[in-house]
Image 1: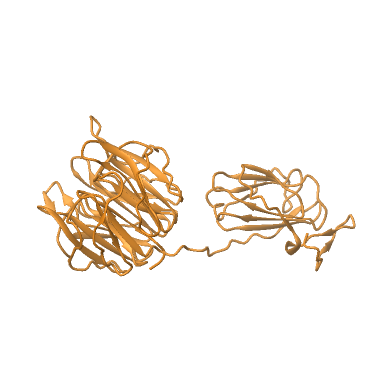
Image 2: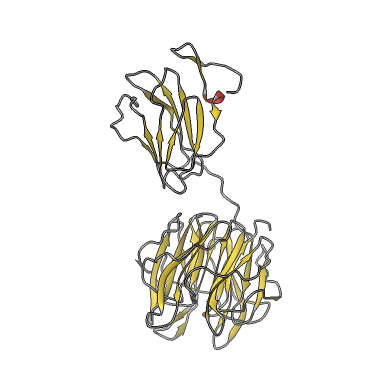
Length: 422
């Protein structure tokens, strides 16, 4: 209790019931699948990992009050179930199902009497939640030459920095933790790899971390859920060379073990975040160039194949732009043996638009990153030889003409955004 009593209700027993402002807020966040609660308390309920069944007290007096708050804005994914423990709830006995399943919801219940039992004083949802600032800078790294190039918040590419960690190509990269990045997997020239290298929010690449999951290359990666990342698909060689598995990356850069993938196993695809908290994998190759996508929800679950829009292709680039949309561009159409200069924009609901004629040199095996909060950059690639050029994308998805690149011409590299600071 706060020690101050104002506008409180006198309980039948003669005691004074706490108001919401005078509740005892329990300091431990509830994370388990069950919880037993007491009157006069407020509880933070975190359902990130599971639903939670809350058992109310077996007895109550008029004016008893309990408050619950969606600690992590996850009740929409994993609901809260109220067990009234023999008492009525809104006039119904405890054989009725009582669930709350809205993200950001708070529940303030007060006990009335034996007839109506517990009655919600309010069960509002907070409509708005804090949104992390978008990343401002980008980094291109690895590939056919083992160097990196930082991109500032204006889209200017810096000169080469000597690479850190094992040289490899055909890897993938994504942002994680909001302002950091991770490079992972790839081919060293002699073996497939599951190595990762973290990038801090200053753009410094860390030493190799022994990877988790299936070694492979020619995969894709994207951020999702505002602060996590996902690696997916790829090429492993052998009799069944293509895979459709994924590896999730936590918001501290820890790579999880394989999850059996959904959709067509393939390589040469790309991925990007969209809609602020979701991701999309698109296009690729299974011996023939594909035009398909797979959406990823806010929990990192990959959806089934969606017949793609536009030209089937592989070894293209993809990045986010406009804070909540994405763009696929360039690539190689193996069926027509053509290097392409076209784009497909992705809406903030994951809908892929038809082909739009691209600007700049058609090429494949390039990389792309977001930068400047709401823009993107495509860089490097291959067309009869390795290239050193970039194309900036503004915040409405318009691709600019070629800019002669800075740094070593190369292909089969990866790129990702990092840093909240411009």
